Amino acid sequence: MGIIGWIVLGLIVGAIAKLIMPGKDPGGIIITMLLGVVGAFLGGFIGKWIFGTGLHEFWSIRTWILAILGSLIVLGIYRVIIGRKAVKGG
Image (cartoon, rainbow, N blue to C red; front, side):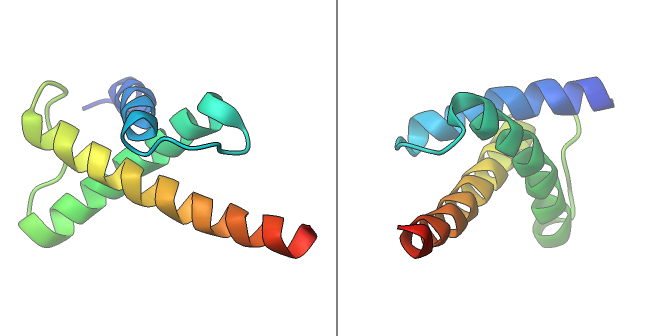
């Protein structure tokens, strides 16, 4: 899958992750979608590391599940980090 495919996949799964984990995030949907791009890369890495297979074809269900899983992980980590900063700053 090319870089454009990764970006498109990441933007879409970022929005899906936001739907699965609703909440008020600093930066809004744009940051969430960018986190989705990072999450797609993370999902590919996790798939390669655990299952021996990464992200391959754009329309593969395995690709989408791994990318969504990675996006949920990145979104959760982002919320923990931002939450700590908000508590310290407030």
